[in-house]
Image (cartoon, rainbow, N blue to C red; front, top):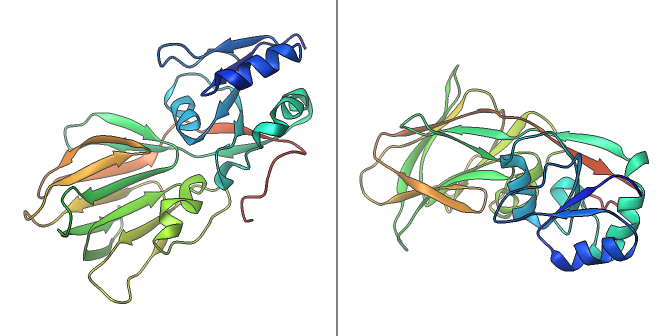
Amino acid sequence: MGTTVGVVGDEALADALRNAGVAVERDSGGTVPGTDRIVAVGQAAVAAVARADGDPLVLPVAAGRGVRSVSRDDAVAAVSALSDARVETHPVLRVTMPDGTVEQAFWDVTLVTADAARISEFTVASTADRIGRFRADGVVIATAAGSSGYAHHVGGPTLAPSKQAVVAPIAPFATDPDHWVLPVVGLSASVERDEATVELLVDDRVSRTIGYQETVTISLGSPVRTAVVAQSQSRFE
């Protein structure tokens, strides 16, 4: 196989691909290879590719249901099938902080209290309306890819790839909380009480604290193209 394949997240799989005759470039020092095809092993690797520049075709391996990943055992065969892959496009969240800095999230964005047994109050809004205001441990805003993860565990639905997000309160004070499926563009989340430290998580990383009356806004970032091959698993099973 003449095309060089980047591998992020698993040296053992990189070795297995080399042994199968695949030209491989590994990630180094947190830098994602600049190859046209990338094998991303695990959810953190997929998120790292989403944050990097470029528009590679990504084969997710052992990365959960949201991206129809393949198993490690099937990865070598799946790489061989990439030339015939169907492509799914996954929207990415562009997260603008209160100070104007921007990060990208592939799976989800979470505002959550840092201290045990403490709740805060949050508002979720769009450009057209206030969606909800509630007391809770936090709130998660998940892409369709991330909707089968933490957002699903707190009661949200699982989505096929789309430009919509699942918004779900975390351990809400209300006994019958709402969950929402909303267009990504124009979403925002604010902290409404000065009672607890609230952390912002972007995918698997703690980004910063969000203060009282500060707002995080969401728009669409650069999408990620993932490969779907015969070995790809269902996102709903």
